Every structure is written in structure tokens, then in C-alpha cells.
Length: 159
Image (cartoon, rainbow, N blue to C red):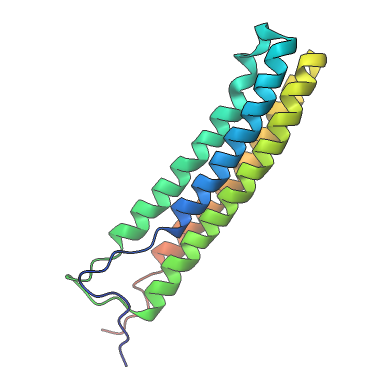
């Protein structure tokens, strides 16, 4: 029994891209508040403390990558799109999106507290960067899992 999910005119939902952008926006906003607050105390450290904002912005690229991968796997005119394919693409989008959302929240919280603490004690900069790298790695793991899950789409066919 074949079950098709998309007609030729429908567009695939991009939940992963939305969730990752929400994480990136939260991380950017929260870290930006910390940078602005720290800039009042120590204006010479503003450019050094913009690292969390940049790292939060990188999260949006992960969502874009997985959205392109999912979109290229959906071509209703060329072949049938089965239920298994839909769940594979949904799970890959959720894996990447939720990992990006949680990483963005972690980057925002650590970035806000880290740049404020860095203004008072410059020796904390390396520790803050390490924590931010580990938070960014969470989103990267979600991207890798999403790519693996998306690559499973199309393997259930017995043609």
C-alpha cells in the first residue's frame, strides 16, 4: 500500500529552520544585552565580547543546511513520497531544530553572564569561550543527526 504525503503543488514545511532561527535570535538578543551592559563598564572590551553573538548567528546556518537537504529530498514530480520519507524528514528537522534551539538558549545565557563577568575579571574569557564552544557543539550534533536521518528517506521502497 502506497501512501503519498505531498501533492505536486505543496511545499514542504521547514520546521527545523524556524526552530534554529528562534534559538539564534534568543542567543543573539540575550548575548547582545550582556555586551551592551558590559560596554558601559569597559568599552574597550566590546569587540572581544561579541563572540557569543557571532556564535549564536552561526546556528541559523545549521537550520539552512538541513532545510536545503530536506527540500532536495522532496520532489513529487519525479517520484512518490512515502510516509516513511515524511517521518524521516520530520525527525531530521526536529533533531536539528530542537538542538539548535537549545544551543541558542545556552549560548544566550552563557554569553550574557560571561561577557559581564569578563568585564570584571578578564581571566574568565577563555572559560567563557570553552563553554560557548560546547554549547555550539550541541547544535552541530543535532545537524549531524539530522543529516543521518534525512539520508534514510527513500530507503523503505521495495521497488
